[in-house]
Image 1 (cartoon, helix red, strand yellow):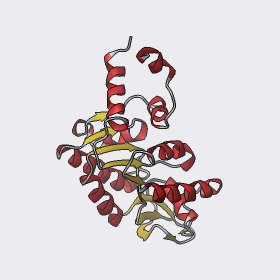
Image 2 (cartoon, rainbow, N blue to C red):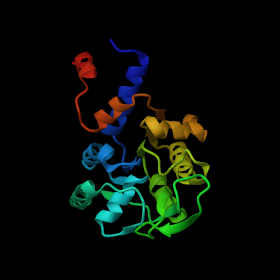
Image 3 (cartoon, helix red, strand yellow):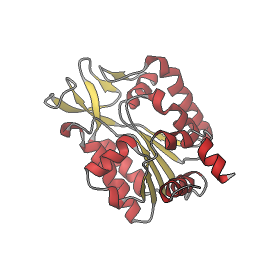
Image 4 (cartoon, rainbow, N blue to C red):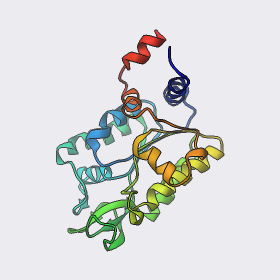
Length: 230
């Protein structure tokens, strides 16, 4: 048998995948495309909107021919990013990339910073958070959503200088939840962020499932759950 926590995890995940109220927006952030590619590919089948933030966004911008300076980039994943964007168009899923970024001249809390278009970052600078225009744009999408899944931060939120984007998205998810949306925070850094900024009690569910939850959203069968349910 399963305990109450496991039952709550499954029920919450199924509300996203199987009992989806639309529009459904998935927020996917974090450093690397390679860590999230399977989730994004699976979400393309069910989401109406996919918001992409964090370091992984810059691989998408480079794939589109943008200038990303010294921002994080996985060159071996450029083709993957193009395929995701093309597939999204075919399936009618709207992908939202950061319009602008808070950029820094070094990876440090005391770095010099400025706001810059995400596809026009000069050499010697790197994107470490989403910018103000992006926050407005992403917030508008979230406030019009009925189901929200969030996995991965929008920037280096551990440093206060680059926490504003992630905090603003947490605020928007809390506001959408208050307005009747169902919101699932998918563990890891996202859970840490909503706890840090004081929004954990203002979202529908904060998962502690970690990697197992991610595998569920990647479409993988979880053998322990499968054995109990079947």
